[in-house]
Length: 115
Length: 114
Image (cartoon, rainbow over all chains, first blue to last red; front, side, top):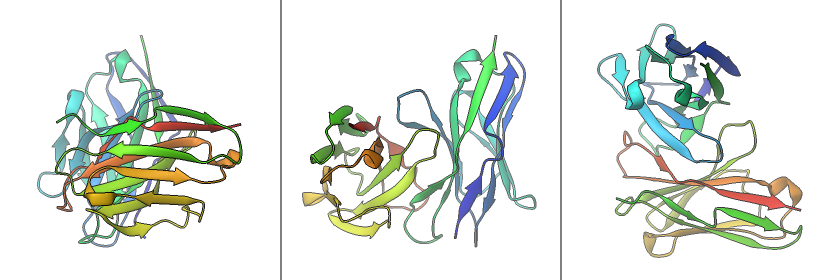
């Protein structure tokens, strides 16, 4: 079965510093990978996805993610963190390649950016 | 494109009562999903529609839960005889059919069972 793991419950970063939120995946076949962000009491907002092509994917709000097949990782990055980036971040993988694109989510990582 | 709309945003109900949530997907999106999210957890898949056909149901979806999507447009999720363990946020999402397409989520419907 497809799955993703987010090994860190929380990541703390100072404003202006680069940030990384980690995600590793386990899939059979080629992965379709996604990142979403969730602000308090809100739904999930799409940030970016990897389907095929360049390993470095650029998304919304200055975020990017690097697909690494050998390490089965899809880490989310941003060169310079903002306090407003503080939120809950979810990595997800599409279930059943070639079939329905139901998403399987990780447990989430809380990002705290300090002024 | 007004996004995925969910109603109500918040519902407080007494244990044993029935509740119904409505979801209006992005227009022309033929796939619709329901997820459940409890505090501190990632969203868990409940069920999925392609047009009006319900094609997959999670084992999380007990017989007290039923979802419909008449005419392939809006969807409803009904929970009968609510239990305190049903307290969660219920998220609706939609997408186009192609498997690489993004799934867009609504703002969610919070359910509190007292």
